[in-house]
Image 1: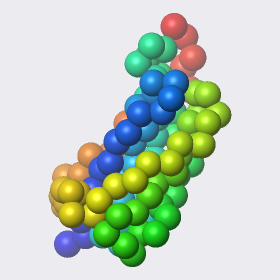
Image 2: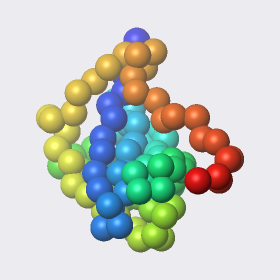
Image 3: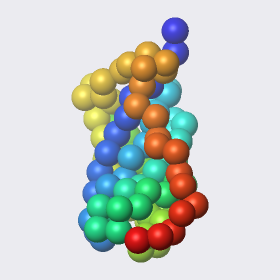
Image 4: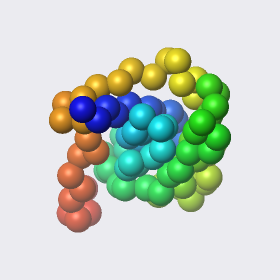
Amino acid sequence: MPSQATIQSRCECQASLSASLNQQRHVLGAWATDPRRKRQEPCPAHSIGADQDRFQVAWLCPFCGRNTLRVFYAGALTWRSSLMSERPPRFSTNNSR
């Protein structure tokens, strides 16, 4: 049964960056949450050096436009069944405050 891991980090603008990874540590989906604006947006992300113990994930923050690069250790990932894995929330197009 396929497994996924979810990773998280912070952007310099304080948005929370998240991504779901497959067992090869490739990004399946990514999203960002801005707690100040109470908004969640999908964002582009990709893994670099996914075949190594220490690999990187790069995000493009949809709130500030920064490219954020973070290092992760493969041994620290927690794997869950893809049926029970954390999934990005549904994104609403409602921009009301």
